[in-house]
Image 1: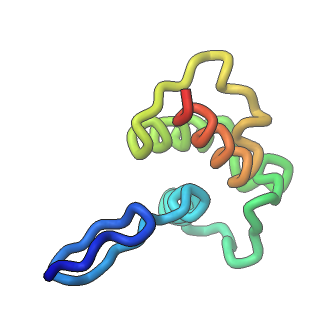
Image 2 (image 1 turned 90 degrees about the horizontal axis):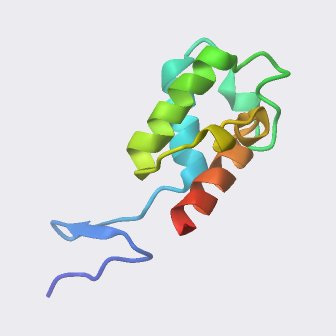
Length: 100
């Protein structure tokens, strides 16, 4: 008897894989594309713009990642700095757009 997926996860060879939180996926992407930053001290609510971790070029990369990873399409109206200021703000717009 195969195990049922827990919390939307999937079962592969009897191992349950839980879905990764939106914030965690965003953080993993940021760590990958900005490896020189010290992400260990950054919280989901920290302002990544004022701290200098993100600039307009990095936001452009984030938008591409979010569109690809979550199957979203951002409009010009979505591309305000406030929506990309923190990991929490990015996760919020992903969830909001995913409900539309």
